Length: 439
Image (cartoon, rainbow, N blue to C red; front, top):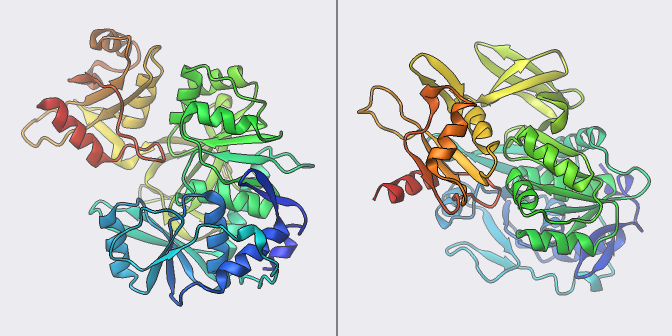
């Protein structure tokens, strides 16, 4: 698959170092970086700058090297993956580098000074990346993605989202590019669909506003419910957006409505997982129905839901409870691991978290099932960020939304939740928070 068939050579592909980078400059930079890369089968692309990451990914493809996408950057995780992928090195663009691994430094200092422009075609069956999820044992589980698989996923996603047709949009992402959502939506989408990658990754709401303000329309904000909530709560003014795209956790309809009213733009969500990539989308304010990407089908077998078709080459079991409406539509009912059964009553942590976060004054909150073999009846715990509310007020509001059996005992008011860089809450971090609160 020749990259020149997917994008023109003169269009801008990235906003980097306060200037536009053309596709021709990008291809030149890729060729220049590919030449000195060390001879290894695998590479951890840990570049923090999103454009550096893109150039590194493309250069690795040119050298037929497979990019490893670890679930996190913890030294233990990287060492564990390096042990099982021994022929590897790390591509980095920053000073903080993992110990014990071979390092190739890439600061991008000469990216814009290159003249080479040869870019070899990438075969659809070439393995491009390996993404990892952590199983119940904590051992990262690998999932191989071919170039053809990634391209098909991006093309399918592009058909479902209202990207501007006549002019490429600038895509500002708050999510890391090493995460599948970040990889597909902030790196591969601009590369393959003619939009513009923005090298910076803002985190604070003021930084998001400042970055969007210096970029031309049309603009798309690619983010998480955590950032959507922060922007809405702080009533941050943003320049005109084509749309907002959210993933990594379920976005409540109330929050989506507030964001659409505040910013005058639609809010969309992506559903997928590390194993499959993007599977479906929805406009959150339209309701609970998700619509599958072209070619993808869901089947129910032995109580599990499997996805296959389109860019999903093999049948893959989902870790979610799904109600299939028809061949193209479904409703999410929560994670299999989040099913809660108390006194014969069933619900999911997803539904409980949505109810909690719908309460006016709650800035962030999560239900947690502590492990306690000594108790016959499960008692849920909740951690809530709500500076102006008391536990009693929150419990009173919850009683109007959920069954009494699922009320949290205890409910802790905290300053912040230990979310990771994608906005998720690792179970280990919640255990540590529980231990700290009980001392």
